[in-house]
Length: 244
Image (cartoon, rainbow, N blue to C red; front, side):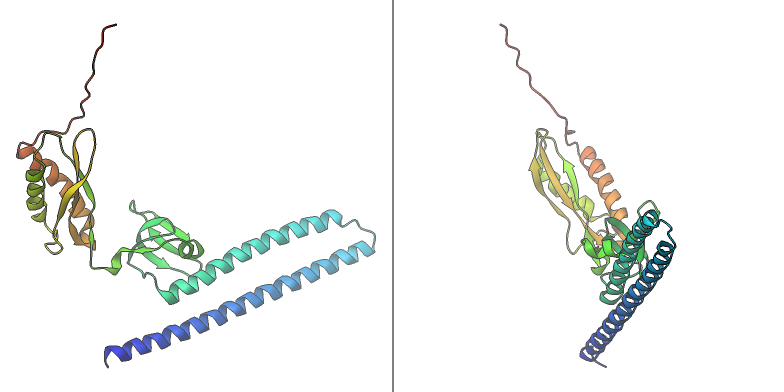
């Protein structure tokens, strides 16, 4: 079976799953609405009977109406999360085990549910995020690509040899374990401040080695520049005294 046949089968399965999911969602909506209407009619019937016997029902009716609004809002939120959960499962912007930013949370996806998804934060806290919030926000899936870039900055002294420093950092960071050679390490001047030039240091690595390369790069930048005798970046300020 070639790739074209597999793609066609996948399209058919996705279309069928979407159709079934929408029908299930519609059925649930009709069931909820029908139940709500039935309960409302029964309540109105009870209130009408009590009123017929002369019992004051104004406060009771207000309480029931308020509770009905609260319950309706809760059901609306549940249905919204359920619908979003169906689309997350069908469209598959991420899967369990992917490293993502979704719903304002960044880390590994542990579970995808119909109403919420569970994402473990960097400090290993299980965070349940409503599927409506996930679909309503930007989703970044870092696991879609086999590698990613590590973005770091390195402050140089204004008295430092910029070209020599950049060449040194390229060589040293390229030698870090798990730093990719293709794409190669990028070291360029990013900006200038009062201390001196700020270098953008950007090695590439596989997703599962990101933090190791991140911390090793910071260590190598400090050690390499110090060992090579580059001046430490120190903020200086000139003051002029004027006698009145």
